[in-house]
Length: 338
Image 1: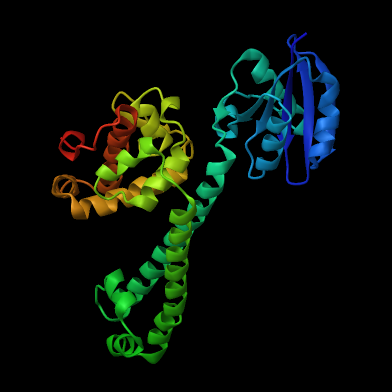
Image 2: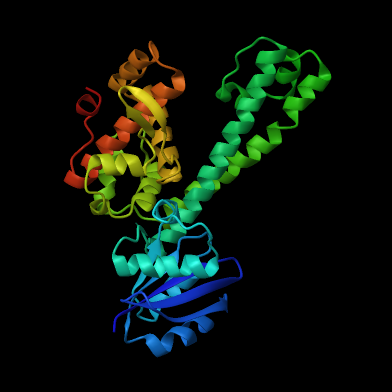
């Protein structure tokens, strides 16, 4: 009889439930996080096991890779979508593992994409770079706020990166206020150096797949950003439509509207936050280097908040990039922003 396995994975252990196609529990056990424990437990049922569902937690790499190397059919469960299907009053590790197995029996388990290990290492490196870029931007914004609050001056990020100690002290009369900015200067410079080092490492060891090289026809997407989009997107064929891809990139609205009234919002965390950031970055540079996109942004800015205008630009770029990747055609900003 066909059997299905569900694993509720934690930081130091995992609860395993094996269930047959009639929803009868065949075996269950809590196992320590050692691949040998899982292989020993699953081995008696190897021939009957159709698939193994593993919850997509922060530490699933070692388990999924190890099970796949042992020729098991492993599927990664998306917990943010699966929670909408479960309406149990009481849950625990045993119930969660059983629910993962049950969803496989019923054919309703929402799956996450298992990135090939060779690209996953590059993806994690580029994710660390995006973390540093966002952290540097947060610090620069904090420094800009000091100038606006204490001196009434609008100082750009480029100016802050070029100014030396004397220039900052001259702009901020109070020495203590100046020190609150100066103490952050070496932090920003260190982050900038590390970002550049990671970019060099990514370009040295990573290779942009041929089907993703066409992304660079979009102004605002360079080598590093195209590589980040490649690693986060995976196979573009897994998205049935442009709307699915835009939603996965977190570039679409989550509002629930009825009779032209907003009745709430959906789960805005569904999707890939790194792709959301990547297309936001692409939109920022595209507004500068592409006149068509720049005009569109200014047109929207007349009626909407700047954050809304930026989100609309990112959404249109992500939608355009879907067709670029699917059809392998150059990015056409005039068509994407008409």
